[in-house]
Length: 422
Image (cartoon, rainbow, N blue to C red; front, side):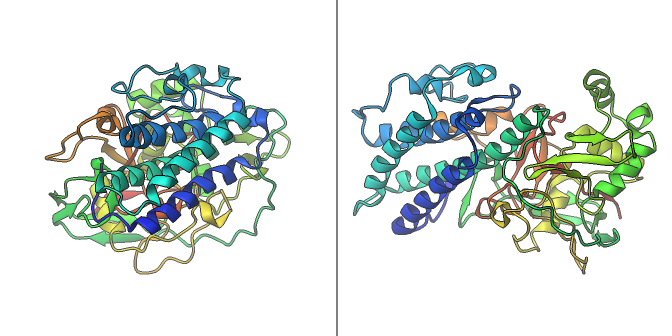
């Protein structure tokens, strides 16, 4: 991890309070039962997210500051360790929903315990640089889990035939999405990756040069209405559109539309589950909850392709980091505004699949110690996504941010932006 030029300590303490409080606020609409269930191995209960993010600070901050630190509960070291083999054993990930104990109230007590001790350190007159850097990593780590709280809860609620809402909210009036246009970029040697000066994860480094051919990028993400044309054209029944692994995934999963979409046989309408409840699919909003396989098949059907992550980053580097993030409270993708001289919605709304493998940049080195396991060991069998989503905190995202998931994953707010050669 790198956190060059760390923020001033008073700012860091305030940021710590703000980020930690945001996790509690996301859990507020949920019952204790909601916080305990696990709907699939890739998801985790909200209670586990609340505990694990506290475990991170206890393990990597409090224990390092004070080797004689008296833990809140010795068994938490195993129960809430995610995948850090250098730290020790972990409780089985697919069985996190079996942890009826500790109770939610005890997990919240654990958070207060950790917060009190961490803030005692951050409010001290002298704080070592390494401590401020690890705290900053921990805060961005917690923001990742805030997004997972929302996506994991949505998946859990999606298994319920009552189709309940995470938080009741009225469906907003939907403006019409602007026509899709293409923006051309000239070939040349470009620099991508983080240049330093503020926080970035290790997988965003080092900044390096890469040659790109002429390319074009779509002005906005693919809409649900456009994707519905693909569905109606038999897109899920046409093997020539799919990668071999994608067609095998179709055959095994039985997928026939984006996750959470259901079809009414009565009137032919399509419905989707949102965090605000079930509603009819809006043709104007970006399609979401699609896998890489679906994104690639749609691009093939549309006579285009998905962008490389370098193409995406070069375009996004010119755009302000603004858009429909978790702070908007919408918690669902919104239709694009009128397109101008540059692509819109590069940030927020939906994570955009790229066709790039999640691999190390030239010169990448895994950080020493347990924190080196954070990103590097996952650089296999994953695809890169860019830009953040409607469930991402705005302060967490930047042009160089590299998200990654297996190509079959679709419970995240993942969408599609097309590209083609110039």
